[in-house]
Image (tube, rainbow, N blue to C red):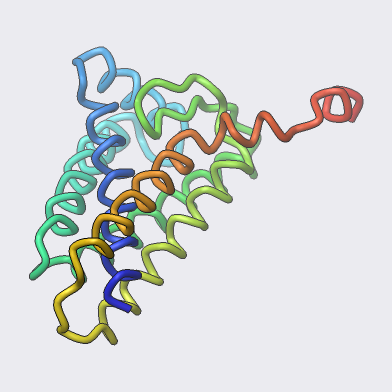
Length: 180
């Protein structure tokens, strides 16, 4: 369970670190992210701008909490809460037919879609798994080699989640989709 706990921590830490970095790499990137939150039309324009800043701040807090062993469980709780909030917003936007660009990692202009729901559900499952593993994990020290393998696996997993919409596109039959 220790390696599962570490792996889930590392995976979510990398995902949220890349998300924060992508949204704050420049004032233009943050403005684009803020515009995408406003375009969701879930709240007023002013409230949406506040929520955009709160999302970035909370993602940063989650990253720090996950990075520190003593606060990792709290980090899982924060990430799960964020992911459930993202799921709610995305689902409402899709239900209402809004084609809003996904600025999850700052750069993409692809509109939100079912792939984003799947990605966030899967990341929430990683968070729940990590939280559960952390709650039952024994205090034995992990082996250095095990930590290295776990970290490498977590980084690869994080990269899959970060590029999830691109990977999903590779497996989408565009001919079938264009005739629907």
